[in-house]
Figure 1: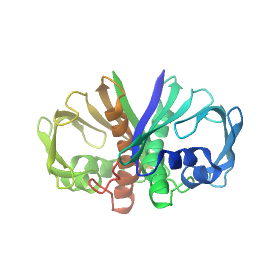
Figure 2 (figure 1 turned 30 degrees about the horizontal axis):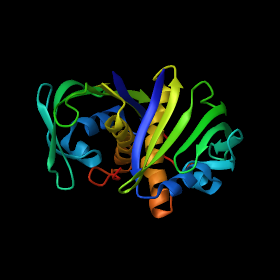
Figure 3 (figure 1 turned 180 degrees about the vertical axis):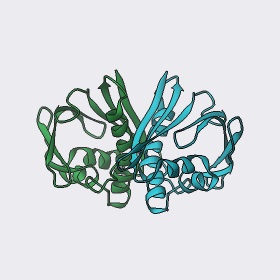
Figure 4 (figure 1 turned 90 degrees about the vertical axis):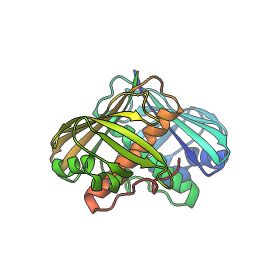
Amino acid sequence: MYSICQKITIEASPGKLYQALTGQEGLCGWWTKTKTIGEVGSIASFLFGPNGEHQVDMKIIALVPNEQVVWKCVSGPWVETGLFTFDIREHDQGCVLRFQHEGWPEMDDFFQHCNAKWGFFFVVSLKSYLETGEGQPHPKDPSI
Amino acid sequence: MYSICQKITIEASPGKLYQALTGQEGLCGWWTKTKTIGEVGSIASFLFGPNGEHQVDMKIIALVPNEQVVWKCVSGPWVETGLFTFDIREHDQGCVLRFQHEGWPEMDDFFQHCNAKWGFFFVVSLKSYLETGEGQPHPKDPSI
């Protein structure tokens, strides 16, 4: 099995990053339109496509305030893959995010596309959302 | 061993993408300051850091016009890793780039940093360089 693994440093507190990964306003601000979000065991629903016509449901597996967020896709294109884990650590310059999306059977085109796209969402959109207040969420992300 | 693998689609011809991966003007336009570039067997030298103070040397292993570019780092931070392979294919919308940087012993922090950074360089800088004429090469890349 293969994993997408990325790490970035952001000039924001661990608490602000945790909010951006767990709150509706935050997720809408850097990732995509977020219809529902909730506590552990509930389903977070995200909308993709130019008009939000593709819904992706993630079960919230773990939430450790200011430290960790874990999802499992239960409906959508990643349902055959494993956990999405966001690990947050404090850092001199703010915080570090380590992201892992595990359980890919192959490093196929979809894996490679998602890997590139997460690079955009983290390095550009999430970082900019937290450092300047303005992200570049889907569908404003580059079409690749 | 682990690999960084990413795929993106660009609205440009395979020939334009090949130029951006093999010409000094192209590489300076989306990746980083390029001191030397050349044919198979020669050394391409790239400069990193705010003032270009860190030189990275890549041996040019293979060049297949409009199809493939392969490098091996011979001096710099990636010297212990394997080949950098850029594969180009024609596509309805222009071309597809598949990138692989193989031979990483671990998916450590440096791997994860580079993986995120390549996402930025491909999805934002290279794509924008080829589609609009303006990239965001180092040191204009976000500091992560």
